[in-house]
Image (tube, rainbow, N blue to C red; front, side):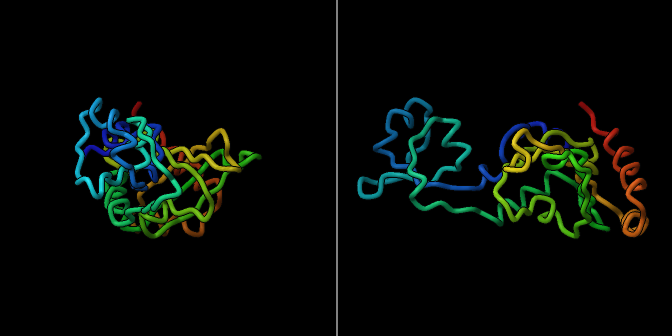
Length: 185
């Protein structure tokens, strides 16, 4: 699998917008449906269908975000598998410029879903990846990071995790620098 190609094709797209769906009324968007040759799956009783927030913006559809909004968590989890390879020892997440003070922060995660799990409102956009999928670079935009901050997710094997778990911060920074250098532009 070419992880770098997958990631580059999504550069700048908020990942959650790909899996957040909103009902779009066909009658309110008839011209846009026809102009963009979009499928219309509906009868006269129920004329509309769900579109991702990404597609709504892409095609300029009119949607009422107060209507039902759903998030397809299963598809999102499956999608993440194409962004970074499996880490038998989990994943190291590191940011060299987090928050207003541009702090260096890190976290060791067990699952891929934890890489993007946040307890606050944010946008996460993939930026780049190493060819083999060991390293994923992404940008997070949030209240604390309005101009965006860079994150690196690195798939760890068991011995790498063991070596990093109780090590000093400098060792973690050097580990990240070494693997971040493998990202190809």
